[in-house]
Amino acid sequence: AKKKVSAKVISQKILADGIYDLRLETEITEDAVPGQFVGVYTDDKSSLLPRPISICGVSKEKNELRLVYRVVGKGTDLFSKLTEGDHVDVLGPLGNGYPMEEAAGKTAILMGGGIGVPPLLELAKRLTRLPEDKRPKDIKIVMGYRNDQTFLADEFRKYAELYIATDDGSLGTHGTVIDALNEQNIEGDVIYTCGPMPMLRGIKKYAAEHNMKAYLSLEERMACGVGACLGCVVKTRDVDAHSHVNNARICTDGPVFDAEDVDI
Ligand code: FES
Image (cartoon, rainbow, N blue to C red; front, side, top):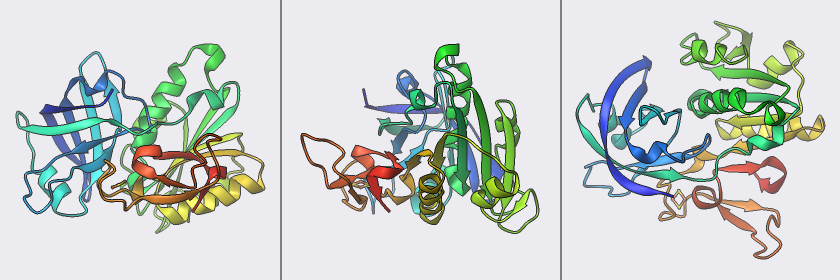
């Protein structure tokens, strides 16, 4: 269940230009699952709403929540200044997370782009730790970056084979994550992804054409993350026979959706 807590900063470091790795000590780790996010509060008086940041790692043993985020504005710029021993208010865990059971016995492809890369790290970890009958038969990881600053790449390699695509061609496939799938002949049954909208649209189309399931995290579209700004409405198919949802809010109904259920 979600709660608002004052979390203590364990450490913060820079992983790449504008990309920060913040570790917090908090009991929010207890029931957090991959694909969920937290709302982080600032003391920026111009906006009292939290900023949604996806969960990159959870260590229940250490009560440690890891957030890897890009500085994109005032709120995230303030977070980037936090140092060991500081406290920050955090609300979470929020959102629904990836349906891991869909990959049991199948080949899962994890695809991330830019700041959509971090939430897939905890997913990769959890998928490999599932009991054997619930685990994917195989996992492939395809990550897209702007350039050779491939943050988290070595950590992904601990869990499965990693394929890289870069916008500038400095590493791996020159192009998108879909270009990497084609170039490397990567095949699978279920895609789990997070990234910018054009990438998600491309993956939705690719999955439909190749008869694959795809679960998209639309977190890029969120602003407040707590149902207050209405900036995250997305058109959906009737996903729920009882409520006939035609408009979903990404922050409260997602951020993860079956690609077939959303109009993006
Ligand atoms: Fe503000 Fe959903 S992100 S209402």
